[in-house]
Image (cartoon, rainbow, N blue to C red; front, side):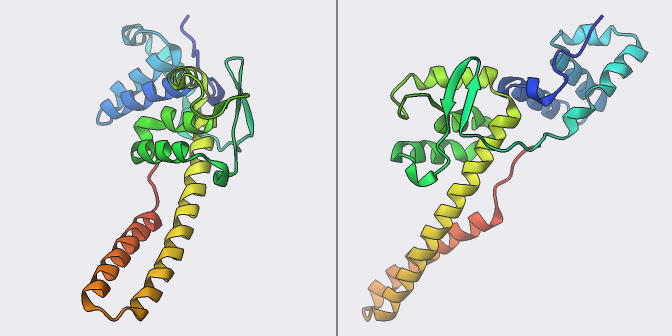
Length: 215
């Protein structure tokens, strides 16, 4: 008898979630195909085995997937144990290294497809400093074993914290540039300063629009 192998969010890793998300996107215009793909993923069996199920069995299993409609919100933790390995999370963004911030900015441009990389920026193997280990190995470990709900809690926490930090920095720069403009007498120099002010205001506008997340 086919059963759901993954029947709660705690069982669903980043990798499994990626598999589900991509299959649903592929079949977004066909509800039946989407349901078949969802059951195939959650039961961890080929899709033809789902297609061969009696209709009442298919319906019974599909009902058990209702939990997938809403991911639970989980508070971020300072420490995690993933696949038997301990990881530390520094919740103070002011203590981030420059390389962490640069990597976050790079991956943060496409959160949906880079979630595993973003999480690995903040999940540091116990006793290590960022980058003083095989980062690809950590990414792979987290991708295959970290529950997606925990991964999102880490990602959202730092996204919000870093957006707040960036906004505060931009407001400071904006005030400083406005003061410079008032003092500046040279017309060309004043125009250059105005261009810089406009760029800052554009970035502020983008941040105020907020970031879009799936699910």
